[in-house]
Image (tube, rainbow, N blue to C red; front, side, top):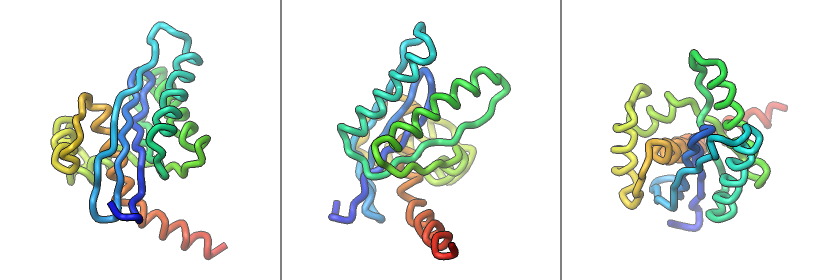
Length: 173
């Protein structure tokens, strides 16, 4: 990687399992850095589980020192209680990088899939296969980990356009 490389953490939030993946991008090439899975203690109170996730994400950020973060947007499912818990885990996934001073981008699951696989309705196995193709050094052990790497790749692909839009909006103020 050149001196222009940017290190990005992708986070796939979940209360039980939160996937994370770190990549470097120089604008043309992607390089795998690390990935993993954070879990919370299922029989603990919600507040304790959220603290576990926060500490886990903060620890990953401290270890791998990404410069930007990307998080998948929450989808709403039929179970309101599950959606609420996912939203709280997602809040932690947004808060931890922000507390570390990182800008955090958000992407829909459809855009992530389209950016990595080419279709917004890709299946988990297709995402894992493309991660293996795009990041041959990655040894992904869970779908959550593969999704997190896909989120980081999506951000690598879209970050320049986001910067241009932000600059254009700032210049109109």
